[in-house]
Image 1 (cartoon, one colour):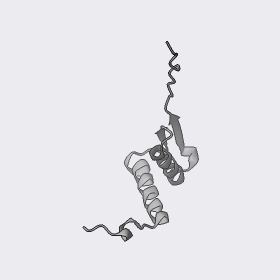
Image 2: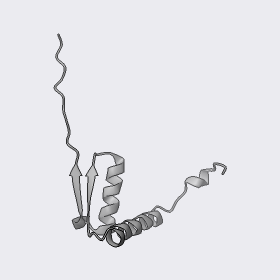
Image 3: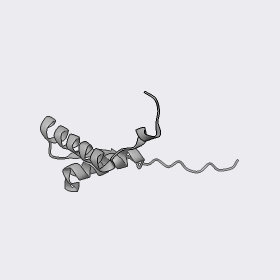
Length: 78
């Protein structure tokens, strides 16, 4: 397949609807669950997954679990 600038064009609303349909189907039909727990890191991937799950299932059915942040003490000069 040759690369062409039009290959990157997509209908974002249509793709979002398709992803939400897939999420609903997998969670409700395949897994027989009514909600999800999403581990979030603050990055774009977990943010997008969280938003899609909330749109697909309803925000009341999505529990976000944040990653613990470990902060090291600043290095002191000798």
